[in-house]
Amino acid sequence: MITIFNRKELIITYDLVKQAELRNLLAGSNIKYLVKTRNLKSPSPFSAGSVGRTGTFGENLSLEYEYKIYVHKDDYNEALSIIKRGI
Image (cartoon, rainbow, N blue to C red; front, side, top):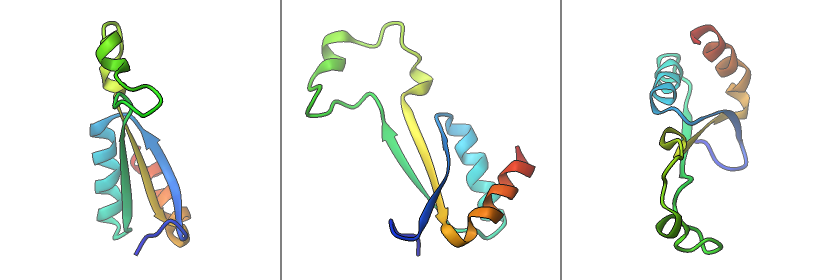
């Protein structure tokens, strides 16, 4: 089980296809992983309604989501070598 206390951040990407490829590489090698997805355009308490006020004209919408992939800290080096070979 991967928890906040035993995980290590493997990679951050903004590409949905890339994160799916990385997940497939890890799963194919029986390495457990955790993906945290964050919508960078969602309003926060500090910028309430900013997207509604300003819109998204001219912004690169492919960078709207951030994907952080974590693995167990004991599997980190193996996972890193797997994704380096797969890229």
